[in-house]
Structure formats: structure tokens, C-alpha cells
Length: 522
Image 1 (cartoon, rainbow, N blue to C red):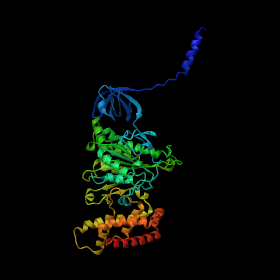
Image 2: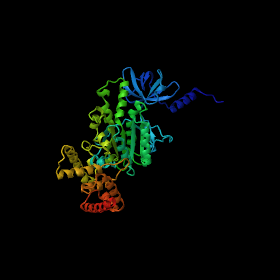
Image 3: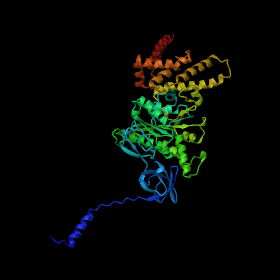
Image 4: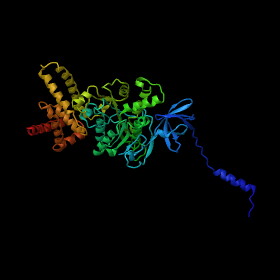
């Protein structure tokens, strides 16, 4: 046996030390000193960051994640994102060095998930293509371009007078039970076949309401391109708080990446996303609950002082990117619920000031049977006009004026019976144009059909006809254009404007149809 010398041992030790690989992971440990109402106070976490993900380890080894919110001198106030009843005093807490992330990718399409991306529909696990932080910096001015592409809702009242463009933030505001959710759902259904990915975020809604939405989308074939993020009323305030931000993060994945999953660029276009936040009033209430429990100083209506910043940093993420960044877009349709039509309350005024216009729904219009119950007078779209096709611009300008004149005269005519012929004609025209704007749920119309319908009303084809026949006339005319005069409909779709020739052909076609319509009526 060969003798092992000291030099041999020295050489072996040097080789082992040279091949040794070491890595240091620094984790700070602390303990829960108080727990209650989903809020934990933790000491010992000196290096915790605001918004950092914290790991709470229960006595049985179960891990519950939390979100660091208050960074005080001696302790950290955190909100728990899981079952806080599992956590007790003295349980161990440690930092992760990460922020809250959600899974993203095509595998989420057609699924119902909670704000953390955990499936709620019983269809099995989700294989995520990537993860994105729920809080993300909104693109700067240089990375954007002006809104110039339409998002068709399929509703005449909105597409004609309050148009929405890709990358816009258009607020839907009104009292409860005025059809706010219906507008969001109708818009999602109308995106079928238009290459738009839709995200519906339900915040503080009844679970039955969310189930109804899922069923409606599924029955209309819209669930295939939609992600539903559900944080119903039964979930904790922290989950309701992060729900819209989680929805925005899932949408941003598609906007910032092309079809191949690679980062979007001039040669790899990003995709277009529509986010419906239903509704941000309940998110604000959840944030208020969290803040008061964390003992933050209350402001107006007991909301914390940074509730404006909460909504502004969310809605600023809606953007139309420039061509260099892939020209993708994220369109936001936030919903706000008012009390007794009071738009001057704290949260409504905040969100109105952040958004690019608002669709105001009125209770009395809804009760009168005007659905969608849009008050055209105070509803506005600040940037959507540039996203309308020229044909719609040609007919919609007259429509808004007609309705404005009608409402003014209607109020005036209630006090006098002796009206001149011109006034009577204006009232008659206005009543029929108002009737023309009525649409039921899930009854979206193509923009070409909308143009034809408004054109028919503007040219006086509805005059002298009973108001009750207006909707039947409109629907039958649309059907006539789809079957008998499909060539003319396709021409409007191609040209995207009403040329003199198209106008002549339209007048001829509607005249021919009206003759047959009157005969059929008899």
C-alpha cells in the first residue's frame, strides 16, 4: 500500500476547495405579534419592502402568503392573501424578495380564476406560459401613440355617439340595476372574430352573478377568448383589492408579447386586449377596509388619501403602444356604481377625472324602457371620435344634434299644447330616433348595419310611421341588407364611407324595402 504523504492530502484538499460552489441566500425571519381581520403585524423584518410578498408558516407547516403594506419603525403591517385563520401569534414569517405575481398566457383563456391565478372552474390546473407582477409601471408618453382604431361595442347608442377606441379608458357609470354590466358583456361578445382578447374582472359581485356571466359568454362562444377573474363578495378584502391589477397584468402579457409568445416589436406585433373592471367602487371599499384595519389615517368618506393614486396607476396601464413596441393595446372599461345618480361623490369624481370619457346610465331612462339607458347629453368620449369609421361620422353628427334638439323641445312641449308644424316634426323625428337606439341584451349590430339604420332615420324613412313599428322596421331592414342587398352592405364595409354613389344606392334600397314593409304590415 502506497504511503499517503502530507503533500498528497494538501493537493486533494486544494482540488476539492477549487471545485466547491457556494451560494448565499439571505432570508429575514420574523414573528407574528398580532393577527385579525386578515391583517397581521410582524416584527423582526427590518429589510422588508413595500408590496413585498411575505411567507407566513403556520404551526402545521402550511404556507400562507401575505403582502407587506405598512413599514413602521418596529413592525410591518401585512395583509394576508390566503386563509388567515390558519395563522396564529408567534408563527414564523420570512421575506421572499419578490412581489405578487400572477400566471399569464393562452392557457388562461376560457378559464375562471381567482386574483392569484388559481382556477375556480374545476377544469384542472393551468400551465402558465409566464408570470407578471400585479403592479407594473404604465408605459411612458414616448412608448404610446394616439388612439385611432375602434372597439365596436355593437350598441348603436355607444358606437354612434360615444365611440371607444383601442387603448382608451372609457368609464361606465350609473346606479345599480341600470345595465352597466350588460354593456361590458355585450362588448366582449361583440369582439368575436376580431382578434381581441377580453378579460372580465368581477370585484365584490355575487357568485351567482359571475356564474350568469360565464354562462352568457359560453352560450355566445365568447369564453374561448376571455379570461374571467373572480373575486366575489365572499373573498377577503386584499384579494378584491388586487383583482383588477391581476386582470391588467394578465392582459399586459398579450399586449407586450406576440402570437409566438416572444416580446412584441416592430416585426412581431403585440395583441389587443379589452379589460372590463366590474366594479372599481367595490375595489375602493375593499382598499378602505384594508387601510382602516392597518390604522392608516382616513380622509374624505373614510377613504385613505391615496385612493386616487390606486385607480390612476391602474387605469394608466390602458395604452395604445407605438409601432416600435408592437402596436398592441389594452382598452379599459372601468365600471363605477353611483348612489342616487350622484356623480359628485368621491370615487366617481376621481375616476371621471382619470378616464377618457364616461357612459352615463340613468335610472329613469331604464325604467322608461330606453335600453341601453344612456344619457347622451352628459355622456362623452374624449378620444373615441378619431376611432370612428368615416361612414359613422357622416351619419352620427346629425343624430346627436337631433336628439339634443328633441330633448330640449320635449321638456318645453310639456307646458304648451299649441305647437307649430316644424316643432311637431322635430318631436316626431326625435321620438323615432330615440326608439331606433333601443337594443336588447346580446343583440349586437355590425357597424355597417348601424350606419344603414341611422341613415334610414336621418333621411326621414321613419317619419309618419307608428313609433312602435320603428324597431321592427330597423331589424327587418338589417335582415334585408344581409340577404337581398349584401353587395351594398359589403361595399360600405370596404369603402368605410358613404360616397355619393353609395348614398344613392342606399336610398333606392331603403325605398324598395319600405314599400314591401308597408305591404307586409297591412
